[in-house]
Image 1: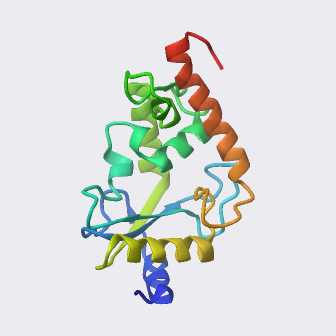
Image 2: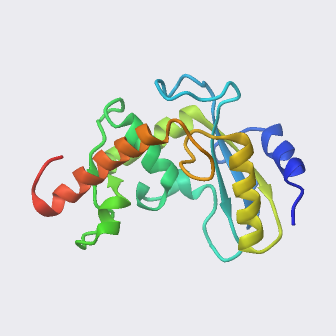
Image 3: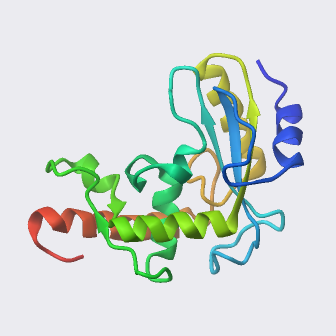
Length: 190
């Protein structure tokens, strides 16, 4: 098991520009807003902590997958940010299924049009910082540490593992994006 207090201190001690954070294979990471008002009306804590996540030995991805991924279909963080920024970015984001098959996962885990994904990536690079703490252990051990960190730190874009008072708003906006993505199959608009 990990000393969660020590991991928390390490995670909060430094911030790096996106793409400059040290990374290992498995561990926990945090994303921070460089300006806590950049996602208003979402309320971020004064330190700007936005999201805590994990990577594990069994998963080949990393925290960088949230930034450099081809699209938001595999990133909860990107889908939440996109839902919050949908009409604020240029071009406005348009939700679409992550794959062409008519499967609920493909619209629930929506993506945005290519130029919208590029606008979201640019916004993230301009407004987010991150840190990573490498941890050796099983997926279950790292998940236990991640869950404890989320419960203690209460990052506003983590929708589970703490009683997030902003979750219903974020979930509603994500639901609208999922409806828009589903409309690509039914021909309807949300």
